[in-house]
Image (cartoon, rainbow, N blue to C red; front, side):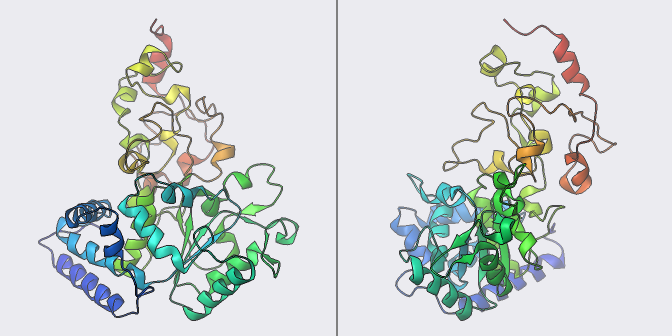
Length: 390
């Protein structure tokens, strides 16, 4: 949503956000002995650090800078909305990427704090007690809690490949029951969003996305793992708007997955100039040339990795010299080909059906990601003719 500061919609939205935050602030806190502000301060972040972070998130959500105080206030009341976080068939990497930081970011601290109502990696309870906690949380906060699910859901052999707890409940039933009473549902990571590596051919467990076990809308936040900012940002959007965000063809929030990796890549100028790494370790690699020829799937992948980066914003794969694997796309394990090689059946070209190289997910959607044969870009072909640097 674009907002003109001179438009009445600006004031209307600001007032709506303020009213929403006031309503949330009246709800009881999940924990009386602590607050998000306190947790952030105890971990060495100043008020200035917090407001700087809030400003960055405000910009990420495409809101005017004057909304920054509201975003800061929204995160302060995030502990009013209970979070139920389930683990299905996955490696726990989405949680681990946030929790195992040597120097926790504000995003990871918020994630750690708000997810304590039920989170199998964080909580001390196990076995019967864990099952009781989950059932109690679903019943107590029915229609109010946010469900976040990490991992694909196995349906093979009637779902018996994921059987959990003393009652021997199947993962598909646990996920479906939790989704039925949730106020909003987020699929965290590529496994939950699209099935992930578990769903790769031949998919012996019959793993499917979370959306296949519920008829309710599911917001997909894919990535292996997704950026912590995309997780917290999606939560903040719900806190502020009280509704689900605008979604693309694959139910991903447009504010995070609207553009391709290729569109925001720091190596894009080298692609346009026909300067490519021919093999890892060559002179082109040392000069930061485009990684398309050594398998980068950036032209086919929608995500904001280059903006958010990983490891407290230190770097991301392409910056480190390795091409994008396309991990935030459906069935990437099967459709993105060999990691170190460009796709043979849909070599990228600058002009695609008149849409251009800067087309967004809205304009291209499923079409770009289908296995459609397209010609190799002219500059890439010219580069192939040129002898590689010694």
